[in-house]
Image (tube, rainbow, N blue to C red; front, side, top):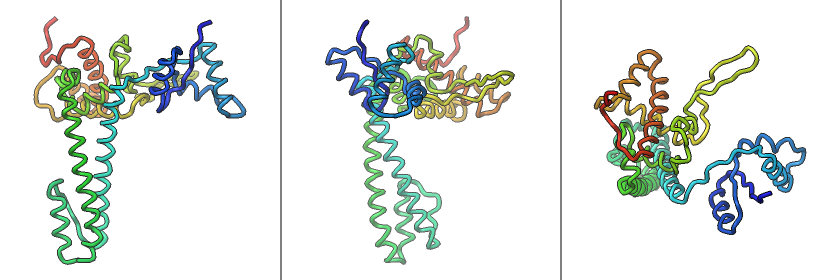
Length: 294
């Protein structure tokens, strides 16, 4: 019997997988949900019992192997995560400033990112005590904004220098964030034998509940990477609402919107957009804005 190492998927999977593979061990990274469903059957939860349970599931074949992302995919994901983190903290800083000033009857109102700080300084002209408190927060916001611009510039440069991202961005609604997120999430397009498996992998396909006389659809499954599912939905919304240029995918989505509503149409377009973008990547062909006659 061939020896293999079972490794439960987790934050250190890529590092452990590469290290064990370099040492000459055949490594199989297994689905966490399968292990989570089987291991709680044990009375005592210890590391030794968990290892024994994983070994038993590997022995009888009750596991599902998962893909371990490459280092390149991890680097792209790290940049996207850092940008999203700084963006969230920047919004938190601005909302905190608005809330603190509102307690004194000072309303910032609608202001652009450039005019935001100038507007707060105008409100604090007559209050030296408030300026003493608000000035450090403005400095924090200023630093966060500068670092966010640095990360945004790095993200745009990465998308422009990557051939795969430039190809994906020919599709409607797909910008640098969507292209990089999709590239990092799929990683290797050949691991999906059918393009229809891509939206299912990211939780964009309907799930089903059937028991006795009950048989109903329960909406999309929402499994997989929520971040990639969200950017695909954003791309579909941009295509349906903001894209001026006509495209077969947009016309198809608007037809669904008239029958089923814009929300269901957005999910349907995101599902089909994931299939199209994956096919573009596999075939190395840009998006066709005009449908060709059969």
